[in-house]
Amino acid sequence: MTDASAGGWVRAQPGGPHARIMGVGGYRPRQVVTNEHFARTMGLSDDWITRRTGIKARRFAAPDETLAVMAAAAADKALAQAGLSAASVDCVIAASTSYLLQAPPLAAEITGLLGSAPAAAFDVGAAMAGFCHALALASHLVSAGTAGHVVVVGTERMSDIVDPVDRSTSFIFGDGAGAVVVGPADRPGIGPVVWGSHPAGIHSIEQQAPWRAAGDRPDGPPSYLRMAGQEVYRWAIQAMPDVARQAMAAAGLTAADLAAFIPHQSNLRICDALATALDLPEHVKVARDLIDMGNTSAASIPLAMERMLASGEVASGGLALLAGYGAGLGYAAQVAWLP
Image (cartoon, rainbow, N blue to C red; front, side):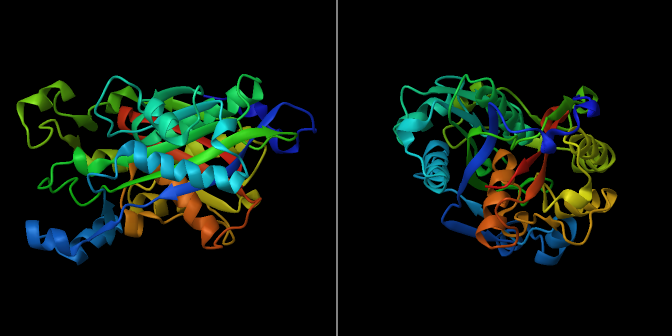
């Protein structure tokens, strides 16, 4: 983990190179799936699902809404907000839990759709914490002068990998994509990352078998994602508050300095428990994108960020604490200025 002695980030003197988030964009699939769907297919009531997760609806992607198509659409919006063209992108980093191929990298297809070739393109396999990991890498690339502008995208079709009749996962996950553009700044805009893993919980969220088995079933992958929800819940509410505090300390901040807290949108009970544990002041807004989007895995943080800014819930220029966590059990957190 990053040592909290790195404090003072937010008060660093002008100079460079530094990195910041310049723009954010999202893509929300067309099909809205309410809890009534699971009442019809599984006998699970809206009240039962809402009390356990806080989720009222989610989006499921259509066949034409591929991971790359959704990602490119989100990245286009982020580039437009940043006032940049696709040709200015030096690197594309994609984070996804639901990409089913080893090669080519998903980021390469996204780069082609964006028209950003010959930008570097690679994927990050950190599951639900992938966006925060990728954001840290992008910040380091820009700060080191290795890249001028980096697109970071989280994109998911969780409906492809979740068993539709699994009572522990089917109603939790949704589809979508969120992206940010990271570029140069004369002051630090993305704080030190605090990241790590808890391998003792590696089986809490996992596939049943390798994806290669999918060829045996033409109607979809038999290797569904399985999750021990209570184990993940207990670990998250115990471990993530300290990770979040370390991220604030590494940036030389306290909760009073924040405008927003944007945790991975896993479960409303977890999000609320983390906010309570951090003793956030009343003015700090807590992301709740999951209420009508479900758990969008690696896409959840940028999607929530986009909504908070677009709705005016938080203002451009405010400080947001980002915290991703999930399969591995992996985690990453950092503070960033909102674009």
